[in-house]
Image (tube, rainbow, N blue to C red):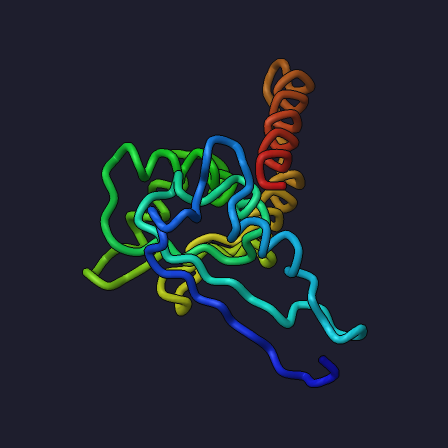
Length: 173
């Protein structure tokens, strides 16, 4: 295909159709995504996008979750289901608890959603409002490195704070 055309395939509520997570085996959707996610015209990659709409997080294979470039979290979830999502995407916000707070902040009205942009590492409420950004977190960490608290055991305190900042940076990667 030499054109600049792009293609979108939307799979909505396909659980029970033979597609979906199946005891560690790659299903047809995972195979499609894995084989054709780099489809292009030689110069331009990414001509095929796949959108999956599912009711249960566990129905998306780990391979598909790792290939995702954007995640929409819409509607209401049980605490158990939301916890599974937080475990997978807790790097948005820096922890599972912080992720849960992002979700609550995003869901102010009935049709609000949380959008996670994997490439830019941003969590947004309805695309409009940035709730969390990796870049902003790094700026905050960088500016806090300039401030050093002096105490009787100042060097030890400084060392502990530096280690804590490094841990936060690792979480956000």
